[in-house]
Image (cartoon, rainbow, N blue to C red; front, side, top):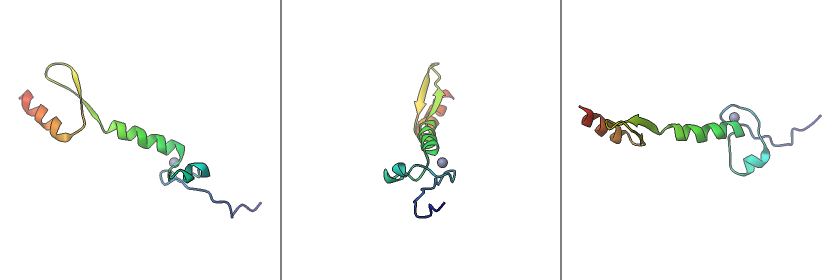
Length: 72
Ligand SMILES: [Zn+2]
């Protein structure tokens, strides 16, 4: 079997080869790692409880710091 002339894109995340169709779309990660990247981006948001008792979504560290000062 000789398929050395077939381009197999390799995921930069896990090293697995993935669909060439995906590579042509500009991805350099496999489907799994692409999902993981999307999730980790969402996870960078941080949910913190406020003194009023409800939860707020913090996307900047400065917001978190000012919130801490108010609780004191
Ligand atoms: Zn991967």
